[in-house]
Image (cartoon, rainbow, N blue to C red; front, side, top):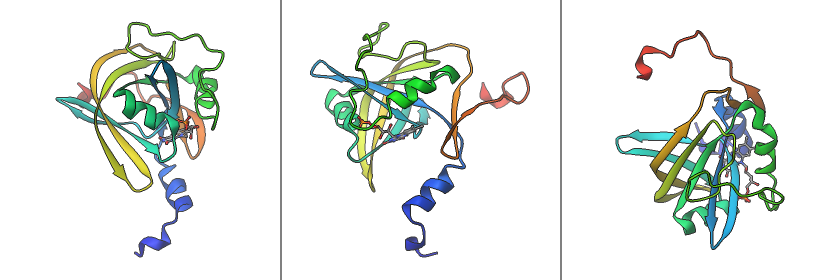
Length: 170
Ligand SMILES: Cc1cc2nc3c(=O)[nH]c(=O)nc-3n(C[C@H](O)[C@H](O)[C@H](O)COP(=O)(O)O)c2cc1C
């Protein structure tokens, strides 16, 4: 199939069938906090623990993350849709009016998130119109709760099948 047939909208709509969670990437550079909503978060490796996030070229937070060399992945709960919207506003100071909370981390975090993964920037790869940032995970904490989902361009609830995790999860 000719690549030209797959335009950006077709790619976005088709990949939108792949349901994800929602996270906010936070960092701090030169004393200024930055944060940005993402769903391109992927676990890459368990040993060593690595993850990746894809930043659109032009995303201000990507520059802050690479300059700071560290960031936190805040995995949002189902109650944090307003946080996801706040950190997705283009051209806004996403932390405006919010008190900064570090909760023991090296950069500000989103309080009440389901999980925090504290990362060092491990490598940065340019790929098409995105910058892929690999994070070496240095610390994690998580809690029980319902996740915020994203599917078909809409926020969604994540409804578990069954009560127990699948056997290969452990
Ligand atoms: C659910 C959701 C997921 C998003 N995922 C990404 C993503 O993975 N990568 C990206 O570059 N932008 C993503 N965005 C868009 C950014 O959050 C948005 O462009 C933001 O304004 C960028 O902020 P900044 O330029 O201040 O860093 C997403 C937005 C939403 C609502």
